[in-house]
Image (cartoon, rainbow, N blue to C red; front, side, top):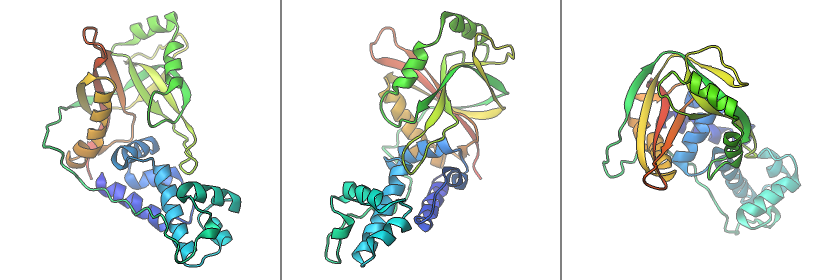
Length: 288
């Protein structure tokens, strides 16, 4: 996985002056666009969109320092107008592009490189599960892409589930894990503007075809799954587990992400406020 991510970074570096379609970047990593966004954010501490923007502005600053014309530099780094470039550049480094000279100290953002870092030698509990094909059945909604904090649109989606739908979900829930799960897919995020939405589903796993009560049915093929149980303060423990999956487990596991959907479930602890048991299910395939 780290090799593929570094190939994505190298590709970005070679094409800073061109459009960078998210699907093309994801193909370099061998994963889906949402998976690339999630992995990059967890490992780099910034969104892929932020990284591309910062690298372009850093390269633009160096060209301006070498005497490049503002208009030429703006269009070279894919900005549609000089005004847009000027506003972005000023927000980025606090100076106007026209103020940059050979002697001006400039802000620079170096090219990132992903490496394996072993943190404390702590073990990570997981299991590998082979599952036949099944369906996700549940309610879904297009929601804004959000990397941090509580997504209020997902909260509203959960609150929208009707009593009839809850009864139908209970009837359909016949495939392990027999829990209410969360899954996200169909991202259309614009990497450059950090805009876009994805579809979020709250539902169950089922083998049944007769899905009623207005619920959506989403087929999932047979896969190998890496399952990561975690227990503790919620959501901090779950978020930390997700970060460790991508930064520690995946690079050295002998597996890579498969082209499918991850999902998770959470059971709140009734005896310890703010604590929960969660499982994160990641579709995997043997690494190339």
